[in-house]
Each structure stands twice: as structure tokens, then as C-alpha cells.
Length: 158
Image (cartoon, rainbow, N blue to C red; front, top):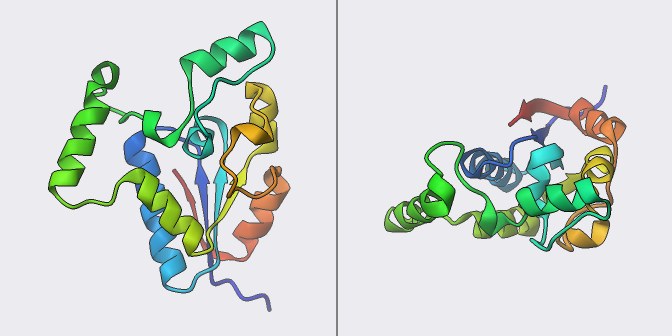
């Protein structure tokens, strides 16, 4: 029988609070020796983008402008207030010694968490591989995510 000791996290949301939760869980799982995979799809891809403008077509460029990626551009799901909420949450996290999101992502990478971008989402949103941080795996489809989930005792959708 296959060892089912891993953790797979599907990161669908691009909201700061949800991405923080996803990376916290991934770091905790990897630190405890679990094979950990994060599959970034649709809005979640923002967390692994460099932050440059994306898109070739008119709609792709509009999407890239209105939904600009980059971990430091991610706002909270509530109380964002045009970016003020993001700043406020970062200040509150710092005051309470909570690890910043960019550092959490680096910890995940350092612990060997596999960051997998969704190929279909990238195609639809006109995001190229070079628009993503260097540490991500090659873009893959749902079959790759399901394979990782099959090796996992926990699969989370955030």
C-alpha cells in the first residue's frame, strides 16, 4: 500500500489572510517531515508571481493590471480599503511578531515545499512562466495535483 503521509494544499484564493493560512500550514507540515505540495490556481497564483504586468491580449493585459500579482500586493479578504487594510495588517503582524508573508513563502521553499502553478489558470490569465518566482515547479494540470493528493493524508482547499 502507498504511504499516505503528505499534505496537499490547493491555493485558490489570492487573499492575504487565506494565503498566510496556506503557507503556515505548508511550513508546519514540511517542518514535521511531511511531503508538502501547494497547487496554485486562479487567484492563488498571485502569491507566486513576481509582480510584473502580465497578459498579451487586451483582456489579458486588463486582467494583469486589475489583478496584479506579487506577494506584497496581496490584500486581506475583508477591510482592504484600497490597500490601507494591507498596510494595517502588516503593521499589526509586525507588532505581534507574526512572520511576514514573503518570509513564510521563503521558509516553505527552504523546507522543500513544492510550489506548483496551474497550467490552465496561467493560460486563461495569460501569465507566463517567467512571470512567476524562480522557485516554482513547472506548471502542471489537475492530474499532477490529484497525484500529490493521492499521496496525502490531508488535502486542503484554501
